[in-house]
Every structure is written in structure tokens, then in C-alpha cells.
Image (cartoon, rainbow, N blue to C red):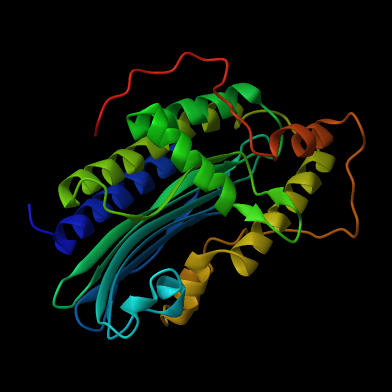
Length: 308
């Protein structure tokens, strides 16, 4: 099978529609906004934002297909030999900011780059992660079990989980953003068809992992103190997106609409000077026992490895 960005684009568009429909079904009171914007050279931007729902305060499900004369620096830092070459890129990015502090925030991104040259260069990237505000071990274990199934082998899961822990880290805070998941860059393992199948498996696994957790927690009672804690942790999320995330830098450098680039930011967040959770509280448990790299599946039997 030859490399085809159109094939990837269509799969990402289908996945975007599936995720929008699922999230709209989870919260039928949420408003959905968005429009289709054609870009130069036949590209497409299709942002969709759900907001002000009973259970979903904000969710952004973004699709882009862009073409340009040269890759932005955020995309060539790891591949300097690709600087100055014309390219195409297509991606889907998802972020869900729930209203209930007991429901985790979640994120997924899948992307594909094709660089035009005498010997075309292509690669996939992406992954997903979970950012809880309160510690529920069963949720985190289920999330990672699902991630391992998406990988098809324990070996691949371990590698991509480790890369996720490394990437979703706030160096200025010295803490993980959440409890991790999967992350991969420059992926072309097994050729285009195999890589596309793997990325499709990751995309399909995202809702399988998140929907049960959302349904389990979205009606949990909460109080004002718990909501304030969620808003403070959302501040950490915003810090990562603005100070660390390569996707944000890529969007800004490539000239995309600022509304689309920053749609992943939470609708509300707070920063309190030198706030420390009370020792022994559930908030302290999150910081001490969850926001650090660890083997969430160590006590579970490993699945039989199966190639993708």
C-alpha cells in the first residue's frame, strides 16, 4: 500500500465525527460550535467545541489538514534535515474538561506528516493521557489496561507509556501532568499500512478507555472545595499547554487560527500562591501517590502479545 495522506485524513475525519457524537450523547445539554475553513492549497480546518453542558464544561475536537512550503520549527527540532522542505500534515486533537471534579480531564492527539522530497518522508505521532483530580485507582488501572490492549503487546505498551510519562511532565513543577497513557513520535514501524492500523487502534481505544470512567463518576456529588482544587489543577494543565507542549508551539508557528490552537485550554482555572494540600487528604494522595511514574499494571497478568 502506498503512502496516502488522503486515506489518513478520511480516517481522522471519521474519528472526529465519532467522538463528537459520543461526547454529545454523554452530555446532550452541551452546545456544539464549529465551522469548516478551507486553507491554502486544499487544506481544511474543522474545529468543533462543546461547551456549557451539565457534565462537560468544555470539550474541543479539532481536525486539520494543512499544506505549506516548509515545516515549522516545532516539527523539525528533532529532524533538522527536513527544514525548508514542503509538507502536508493532518491531525485530530481532543480535550475534555468535565464539570465534575471526580471526572478526569483527558486528551488525545493523532497526527501524520508527509514531507515532499526526492525520497518522501512520512511519520505518525500522537497518543492519549488521563489527568484526574481525585485518586481512583480502579479508573487508572482500567485506563492503562485499555492502553495496553490498544498497543497489541505488553512490550509496545511499556515503551509508549514510558514516553508518555517523559513527555507529559512539568519540569518547572517537578511533577507529571496526570497518570499518563501512551505517547509516540516519528512512528513508521512496519511500514505505512501497519503504522496506520496501529494509529487507528489508538484512536478507537480512546473512547473505550474514557467513556466508562466518565459514566462512573459524572454524577458523584462534589463541594466547592473540591471544585476549587479542580480549578487549581487545571492551572497546571494550562501551564503545560502554554510552556511545554510542542503541539501548541506548532500551531502558533504554522499560522493556524489562534482560537483553534488554544481551544484545548480550560474555560476556568485558578492559581493560588504556594498552595499545599492538607496532609492525609485525598488531594495530597493524588500528588504523592498518583502524579509520579509507576507501573499501574504490575499486579495484573500480562496479555498475550499480538502483533498489529
